[in-house]
Image (cartoon, rainbow, N blue to C red; front, side, top):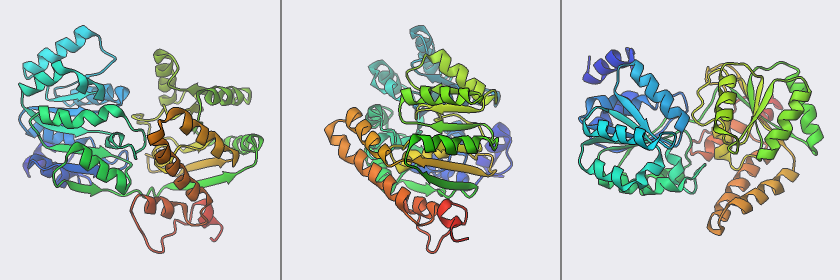
Length: 401
């Protein structure tokens, strides 16, 4: 039994690694940078958690997902691992106390929000301690070509410098070839190992329902929900849209709640907990819901309006089917929705970003209009080309079966 296998068994209770985990872990331990594109639920977290236990010093994990931080830290505590987090949910005194624990070497893995990088006090602490590795979760956030770009990620190169350039592992579930190049460049990764675990979701059925009006959307929604499909998520493009649709669903006798970033924090947490415990049928949300939500038994995702890009669509539909049981991804497409999405892009983006966002929207439109296999189109978009591939389950393939 190798050293990594001993740690795997002792701390995590597993007898063997999954997929490329062993190679990735040993690469990080050797000091080489790594870029991992792996689907949610594929075991990305272990790829930095285990090396963090073997290497001397403090491992930093950059994550934009505040809710996920606490879940990860609680899980590591149950394994007997000294882990902690620092983010905006903490009071100043709590943050200071954690800084003192860092100085006393009482933390092995520290999760931090990207905005923490701007703290000169925090950077000064890093200069005085040994940083074993830096893990950048949701690494696509550093790329303006990526889904969910976050400006704070642009300062990560400075963090790596202040940490005396330890090995860096960048992780994401969604990245086109352009985004991968951007991640490598903006993080300054040196000849990284690149591991792509595949984008094919074999248990998925992708469907697009083309309609002329919102009334037709509602009719399709009614018919689908009458089948009692289970507890799912409906995505819509605006906060107001989530509220209107959730009220409509309630009037149909369905246990539904709306969710968006403008709601009170405690209200959002209450809705999320109810959803996780199957105390509601549907959650109607903007893209604010889902990142870091680990619920395995979601059987369907419906997009009531157009998402902003194929990356966003793939990311959001990936919240279903994590139990490897059959899952459906249904997009309700009305031609007028294109103009609504264009207006959203123009409102929220500076001129330099508009062209990129519009290009992503046009790529999504190609997907919608394509007569070819839905899965084949998605795989090709992310650089995974398969000649003569047919899933035999999407709406396009079903026409020929």
